[in-house]
Image (cartoon, rainbow, N blue to C red; front, top):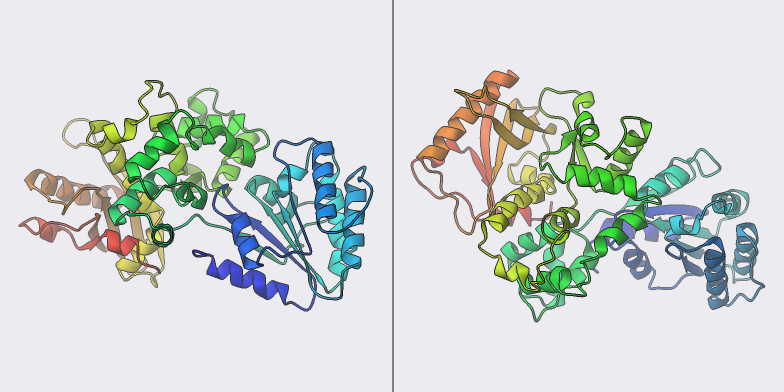
Length: 473
């Protein structure tokens, strides 16, 4: 199994605890939550059940009954969730004395409208399981919003009951590389970065790659062939995470139009995306918690001026290239290798990959142990003498140094010419003037293969390469 060492160790330690434990596992759909739990325990559980996507209450109860019977517990079909959990208690009580591990997967799907599921679950845990020493309950779900509201921050009986909560992050570049090697895929690090721009760190998407095809051929098959596995993933993705996905899709659609992100007011101004009320706050929080967007504060702004940026790689790729494609070209991605649209997109997508690996950048700069904050900066210019400027990654450090990070995707060493050198000098000068930042300002370049040595190279104080982004921290 690739990665997840920390999470697996936590689960194994909880399984050995001297009293009952409740573990909450959540994270973006397709990151491998279920696989990680099952692999950790060798697919052996005292009871295991997975909710039915888009099922009715009757569907969910029937499936739970089937799981009870698969576990060896014969009973009549439960009429409601109280009866279902009563049968689960009966099953566990009849097992030999030992730690009993119960895995309830896709918990949010079980909570259909007016089903009483959460109340019955609360009673099962608070009134019975937590009073014993031998129950290890693992609940898992992709709907981070539901898991947070009904379990982690519940106002009901599950409030503050979780022994541990494990948010499963997407794979890093280093973990994707190990995954690629294990599958026998012939992809070098540049290919893996290119794949990350499309798939992000969703393990399931990487597992769909065929080792007999190039990366471009794989993307063509998955997105642009008639029955591509990921051509229709978009609707499934948001439907599985949010009970009412349409308002969330409206928000990410609005954010997808502007690569630097939008303020709350700008989102509202797009029209139809969301009303400027408490619902928008909840939706933005849920999208952030689920890993689809990030919130950041530009240099000099407070939280009130926060910018929300869409960062889910699959979503952004689908918006840009797959959403409205109807030309029938099943080899579109292979045919567009050198197209201006693809080259421009790769530049923006590489910046996003870098933002997802800021910890690797800081480690490469030798400042992982220095207190720092991450922000962005944008100057609108004056429309005449001074042009606007933008830096997507600004690292402000406690040692009075600020790193302005320039992220450039290219096929070889990046060359700074005279025009670029002048732009860089103006950028540093404008940044210092407009922010009033004191201390050192270091230009940092993040590129696949480094900066070409010429007379302008000395403008750059530090550089980070692909090897650094792939390095484990």
